[in-house]
Amino acid sequence: GVKTVVMNAEFCSADDIKKAYTECDGLALGSPTLGGQMPTQMKEALGVILNAAQQGNKESTSVRKSGSSVISRVPCGVFGSYGWSGEAVDELFVRLRDGGFEFAFDPVRCKFKPTEEVLGEAEAAGTRLAQKINDDRRAREQAIGD
Image (spheres, rainbow, N blue to C red):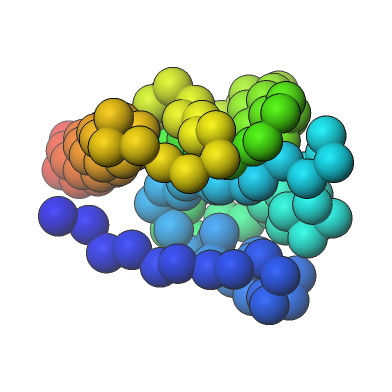
């Protein structure tokens, strides 16, 4: 099991998003596609996360040692809903991938309302993310013990 924190980018400040990112061990970002685009609030939240990862806040729990380098990116995944096109999920995926993030699951897309199949995919994706977080945590603990 892992602890989860759900945040709505529409009601969070940039500081809230940055603080949550610097304290997390993994993240799943979701966004609808509205008018063929990701909503402004999600674009801003994504920018804050990418900037925080680039800064490599060495005091955060999201910073992990890998050999001699410091990795400030946590395992992640993306999901989203759409009516016609679904660009928001693709944009989240590409920008995080280009930012050096490792994905724990393939993007999950939902057209209009989620079906039982899509809900099952989402649950499986969450399980894979939790497994990746726990695997990374064990690897960090083992590296500290060595």
